[in-house]
Image (cartoon, rainbow, N blue to C red):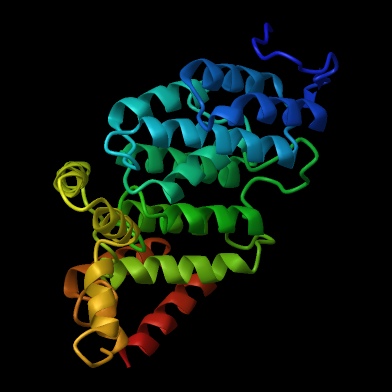
Length: 316
């Protein structure tokens, strides 16, 4: 592999591992101008293909550099485009799979940092984690990992939680039908296994979120963000920067701030958070969905029992 970066140590890559000195050298070459250009990011992606045993310092650098490039080149800023997502997935994918924990962490980090992204990127990530759990191989498993197929680890639970509730994708703090279906598939594939204790909590909270119809925050679309930025460009720069930050942080940020500190009163918390459904009752169609999944194997397993108990307590 030809590296265009200067001053890399001769032993930068040995047996699929990159040295900490090489990572420091890369940082020194990339960050002085405060930006990552397309040539640099292409080289970083190429190096990552050769790093078969990524260390945490390498993963941190890889994720930071590629994220910086994509966010800075997104229009409007912070909204990952269809073209960017297609380019990234093509560069990450190997026959429909991710073969590196660095790649998985990059995709998840982008969902957390961006205001929006194409839905298929989030779906692609979830497929990778589900496959790793069901088949016992993938970006969440390493060669020395004794965890077998049909078992979910604490690390995989944490990754699933990050993806499901990430700001970009289907919606922040919202579980949709496809995600709830995925949680049930993983539940069925891992029943009776030595799963992480976090799995029961994630399954119950995730499916209950879908059934209770919580909508979470409604982030601005890329078109709305672009129009907003154009409007602010013609206003006072100081005020525009302040408002832009509030809107980017939360579409209800300005309203929340007024409700919290303005008009001589402090509103209750329910007025500050984004509005969801007015109650947490399970509707008739949702009950039918749940019944179909619970009765599919003609028995109630421990996780289904925990979910039913949780919904009953919430309704009460």
